[in-house]
Length: 270
Ligand code: NAD
Image (cartoon, rainbow, N blue to C red; front, side, top):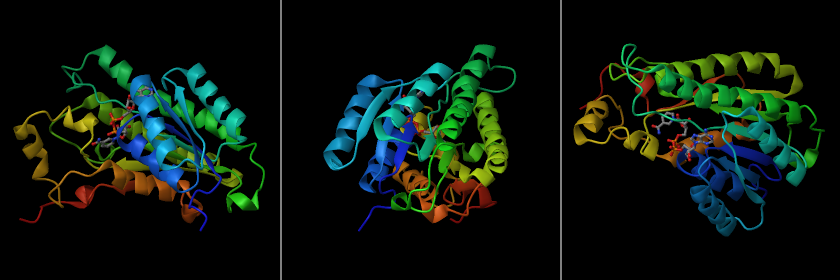
């Protein structure tokens, strides 16, 4: 049985842990060559080793890349194309949630800029260089229907809902990811390049759990979760796999919510 991403070439940013690592493991197990990018090389190297161990038949590469630096993102895309011949999937997943990100009065400008540079500008750079590479893709029946590619940008449920526990820069950056992705999806639809946003709900990954570092903080959120639990990174990876694969060939420009029903919720069950 060919994998759901058989012979495709995928870049995943923020691949050293959380959603990025689970996605790299899943994409590779479905036949994709994976180029894994992160700023944290110590963790990234062991993440790539894990992918190679579980899926030795595909290529897996570690690339040090700070997504907020355009030259590094350009090099990342070049490396994928040089090593594997093309780029089919770009998962712009790297993001930060800074502990000093707060409300309008308390958030310092440097925290705002740092967050925007990684969470928004980093996604733009990823889209920009992936689109340039995907435009060169030639039809190839062995790789499925697509001739262009699939770009997935990680936003968040906070792009759709307000919270009285503010992280203003984070929320604004994720809202902008949704708007930018939607517009790019329209611009590049006729080139066969699909762009979608992934909107995860609150997850049990270090990004959120480091932020919710007391039982009180976790309980404050838990009461609003319809399923009564935080999500898992693998549940996002499965959605990213669908958006990356040709199974989602008629889906573009969407805010793909994987939030356990949170954004549809008024009152939770007891
Ligand atoms: P995580 O912290 O587990 O992983 C994020 C990875 O991104 C880390 O490996 C980190 O080293 C890397 N990274 C940080 N800055 C980078 C940079 N400048 N360049 C390259 N890599 C960088 O987080 P996660 O929970 O897996 O989150 C992944 C994405 O999902 C983020 O965009 C996050 O905002 C989003 N998200 C997470 C949640 C959640 O509850 N965890 C909810 C909604 C959205």
